Image (cartoon, rainbow, N blue to C red; front, side, top):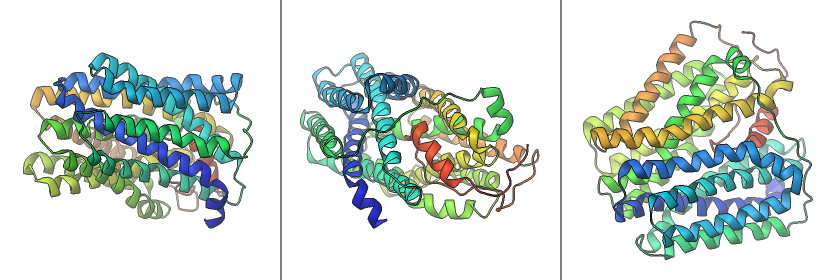
Length: 416
């Protein structure tokens, strides 16, 4: 790992700063929206716009990179992100915020595609898995650190919008000044949804449901916190717990998944997450209880996403992994766009508990579907499974293809 850090530190440092900036704006907007008196449902549209932009970016940015190159795309999108972060404070209106969030989602998708391509090109077959693992850890750490910075200024002012803009601008300096050449890049086409579903029904349905869960969990957390009257410090602690839980539990759950039926593990984790949501609704806990609940929900949501990718990969030929990963992430993107919107609607309908109702219902649906799928196909043996790979929901098809390729087992593939 030391050798990996020695060669990739400029990229990892840049990604860390980028994620701090991105993590700040996501939480800050939910808090500032409450201050500006923007209704909950309209704020859900603002939060959903990021995922819409990210989805469009996954479709268009690869062709853009092929036409003008990595460096130009990277620099141009980074400049747009930095400018957009400042403009949030200039015009605090939900329509302008939604447009800026859409732009930021599009740009961050392009930045991730470029960074992950560089990381892949600069890694060897021996350290590629470690490089991607370090990259994913840095992403989660950046968002956790971002929450602490929310407490250094007044969310009603300008400072907290300027800080992420500056951090994003600084993030590109170590990356663009590194001597690593731009990699070759090939556009990844999606596998047809019918073929993908036949390969792994649970993977397709589960990824769609988890898109709704994770987008609501991350995108609407600060909106929900502001609605119930949490302080800035309490909201930042709650959001940090979501990502910290995901970071801590990825590895032990991954270790278990390499030795256990992944469908049953998905079932158990989704049931735990759904039960957690119901307990929050029934118990109405204080700040400590909410932080624990956030850590549990984040601790199951992140690994379930990676588990579903690994499970689908177990039923694919190696030549199909790239197109399948692009298809799965498109399905995830569709689910993500609806997550905040449905959550906002439910919060208007039943009150703040709608935040937890939405996630509990989706996780209960995943539990039931995983239980049914366990009766339809034999379980693979550990020898037939590929290895679990740490992957976050913000990863693009580039990173997903790399980690799935690394995790692919030399053993026999499962059959439908």
